[in-house]
Length: 84
Image (tube, rainbow, N blue to C red; front, side, top):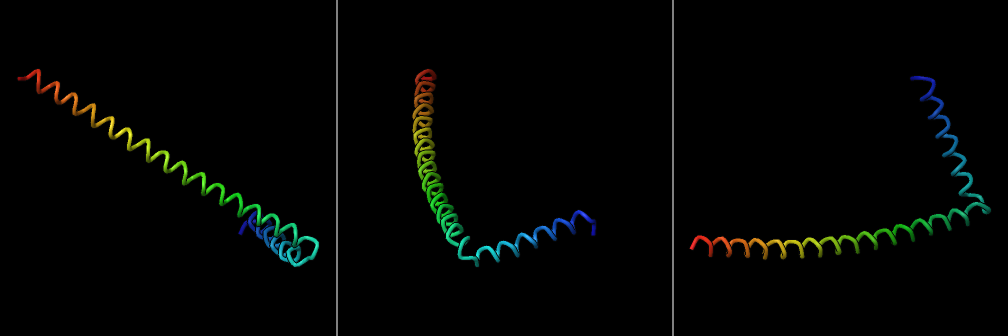
C-alpha cells in the first residue's frame, strides 16, 4: 500500500470518528438536523422539477410526432396526385 492511500484512509477514518462524536453532541445535533431537513426539501423540489420537465418533454414529443405524421401524410397525398 502506498503512503498516499494510508494517509487518505486515516483522514477518512478521523473525519468519520469526529462526525459520529459531533452528531452525539447537543450543540451540533440541531444544526445537523436542520441540514438534513434542508437536503430533503431540496431533493423533493428537484424531483418535482424533474417530473414537470419529463411531462413537458413528453408533450413536445407527442406534438412533434403528430405534426410529423401530418406532414408525411400530406406529402404522400401530393405524390399520389402527381402520379395519377
